[in-house]
Image (cartoon, rainbow, N blue to C red; front, side):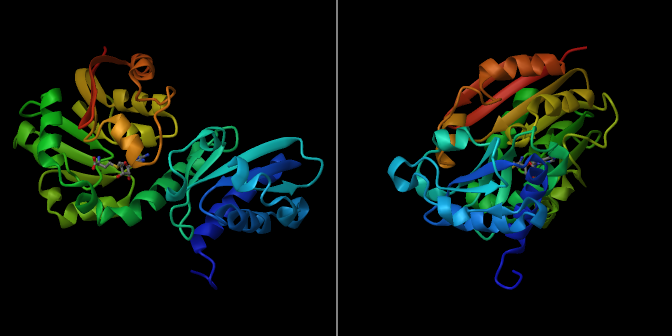
Amino acid sequence: MLGGVSQRLTEVTAFLAEILTPRAPLTVIVDGGDHGAAGHFAARLAAAFPPSARAWNVDAVLGLTGSSGGALDSALNVLEPAADRVIVYLRSGGRGPAGPGERRAQVVIDNHDPQWPVIRELHPRLADPDRWHLAESQAFFAPRAAGWDDKFGEDLPAYAKAVDAVAPEPGDVVLDIGCGTGRALPALAAAVGPAGRVIGLDCTRDMLTTARTKGRDRWATLVQADARHLPVADAAAEVVFAAGLVHHLPDPAAGLAELARVTRAGGRLALFHPTGRAALAARHGRTLTADEPLNEANLEPLLTSAGWALSVYEDDDDRFLAVAVRVS
Ligand SMILES: C[S@@+](CC[C@H](N)C(=O)[O-])C[C@H]1O[C@@H](n2cnc3c(N)ncnc32)[C@H](O)[C@@H]1O
């Protein structure tokens, strides 16, 4: 905290002001959040705009529709007349399943802790994901790393079962991408044996630190890396395991293509989660929508265009598993 103002809030609002300023004149609407959160965030965002693009009129439009319609909570105009409109949605635990407010937003911010807002989605027309994805993912996952396994369970048997589905063989090179605290690593290491090699990669240093604290570096080499630009040679791996990763990537198609690049022809990919999609969405207070990348109707063509052939698709309450084979 700096002078009572969260440094994270300052970072997020400064970044948004930086990418929105060139779009002025525009109206920014801050929607969602618990009571008062949208107004507070809008005021901080307004203050972050440079004098040349002075944000004004924040208070005048606060409570635009308010609680009555549950639609738009606060807005600030940046110069006048506003030709463009950007909706910033604050996700919080207070309002039940995400409704149309979140779906129509161009910026989605996890605001469960208003002192620690994290950008979770940002429309690519506003900024290239390279400008925000890594820093914001790290900001999201780092505070969760130490308690990750306590909160979600070690679940090692579920991970071992998912590893079986891609059948790594003794001597194989296996990558666990977005490995987090390394819940899959013991099973992957057991499958490839001493002649094989397991590498766990994750962009969040604190996740890898927790993996080491749990002794999981015994099973794998741990590397801090971006799944979208892997420090791995082409066709280096027989098996790629990615649990809970793909829906966190800003461009899942590009992410799947990068996983394909590092996998040899005939190699296998497991996309896994120890909870099914519907149960996971409910846990996050969301309802599933048809456009999600892990929906089978979307995933199959995404995989195909990235160089994979989908061979298994399961989406039960207690697990999500898609297995794909690298096409030569
Ligand atoms: C939902 S967690 C899953 C962790 C672990 N696979 C598990 O199943 O427990 C997602 C992980 O992906 C990582 N991640 C998100 N974006 C990433 C990226 N671009 N590159 C590498 N890791 C990323 C996060 O740091 C986090 O550890």
